[in-house]
Length: 171
Image 1 (cartoon, helix red, strand yellow):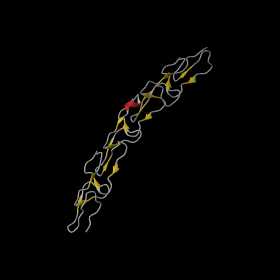
Image 2 (cartoon, helix red, strand yellow):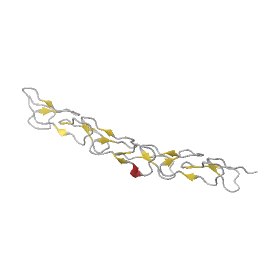
Image 3 (tube, one colour):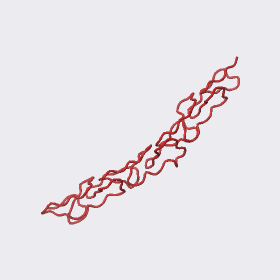
Image 4 (cartoon, rainbow, N blue to C red):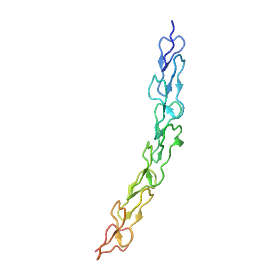
């Protein structure tokens, strides 16, 4: 007697054994002659599966996906179910997003990002007092700034910094 092909697999005509659904496809009920591909925004990494899963935050899944495709560096996606690469949005200047980022991270004071990929510390002679900024500012004349400075340091009495962008005062 013939038996219905089990869920998670399919059976060809006159088949002696069920064939497991490959990753990226499912058979949610028994008795199917073919597996169904996961729709865009969902994936299935296992074989013999009966349901697809929502694509992870930080990426997207095209039709028939067996894994989440991570958002590129400089982009992020903070919710599940992304179906297209365009669902990953720009991180923006003043923030950092590594590959597969679910959330954008604001650059801390003393650093900046012009590309939305990494926050770089301000160089000696520069400062940034605010978070989420795209650039560091030159240290003003009469003061100096160490690397990653959040504010200029005034020169001590008897010393000076005649130009902006100094990393030390001359005494």
